[in-house]
Length: 160
Image (cartoon, rainbow, N blue to C red; front, side, top):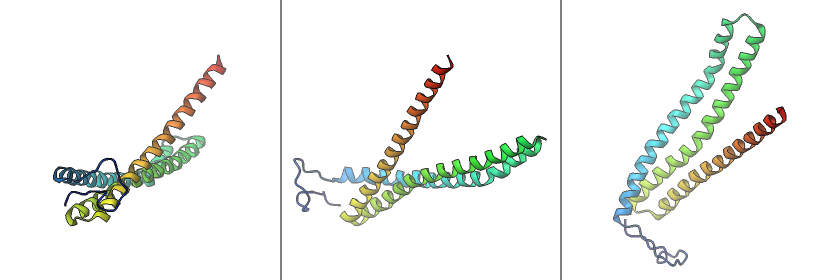
């Protein structure tokens, strides 16, 4: 792949002219291979989570048969369903960044192999989407943690 000059390629003018040299190409190729590995492991982990979630109801109902109480049986059955739903949601939330990472890897490898600017741009778009998804998810979870902390401190102060 020839060094890429954004200004010469008709892009916006920058103060700095960035170029993709041979060392950068090497780094991008290695990054794409690691991204593919991590995304495939993520797909497998998502699949395992979904399989566990689907069998959680059976696992929890077998626990309920150990006890003789009808209250225990109904609460454990509900717990199995809740467990299943939570783990399926977690698996889906984990699947999408892995998909973006996998698409990044494929597009980057294709761009480097074929000297294709369109695939290079698409690869970086997928990488951006991956980080954006994980960033938004992080903000959401941090907000839940903050809200939970406020609730716990409020309840604790009322109990005094």
